[in-house]
Image 1 (tube, one colour):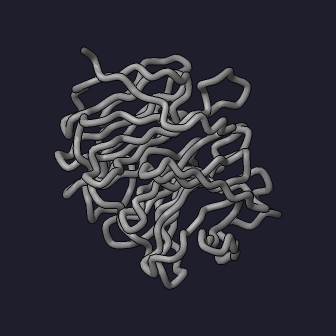
Image 2 (cartoon, rainbow, N blue to C red; image 1 turned 135 degrees about the horizontal axis):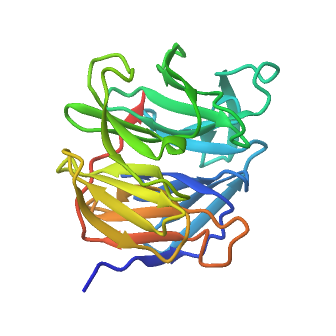
Length: 283
């Protein structure tokens, strides 16, 4: 029997994104970008919480203090404390008066505790996006520019994986080298059409699991770029994924439900396919 995704929560997200697993609380956190919300689900007891924000969050990271989340939103970063519901703006990445239509998109912490975050034109009308690397000190370094829809941030022991959904391609960059076309190699590309790679997660064997937006599936590629598995999903626009659960063997998948019927916008899960890696903390 082929693997079958189960609906964990009929979240009704307009644009679910950025899932991360918090081992300490055994909770999954993610965002609803256009719903301006942070969501949390605890499998033990099926507890679901949702917090509204005054901004559109797009990506998350657990902070080293164990009490707060780093949140990418609109033109910058802030901190959110789930126990109190407090939102605190922190750092501006791009000036709203210079790039008024830009917003943050996909982001993730690397194994060194630095947060990588991409920006994009909100209506994808131009390639005005950039990829930034942010230190706990607040130091910001630009990694790439001229991006359309930055997605897929994942690290293996020797490679960094990154994709621009407008290019319908995910690329592999050797660790420790500057990010440029010359240093990278295509990991995989999708044929011309509407479907494109969105968010990804890497497993303990170095395989990359990528949500295929408008493809209603998740694809697994080996480190050599070979397609190892493709699993159909009950949502048209899966957006991102992460491994969670006590043994990190449950692949949670967010989705977009905007202008689509249910179960689009739901939180999904695939069990027992692979084991993931612990989520790095910021700082």
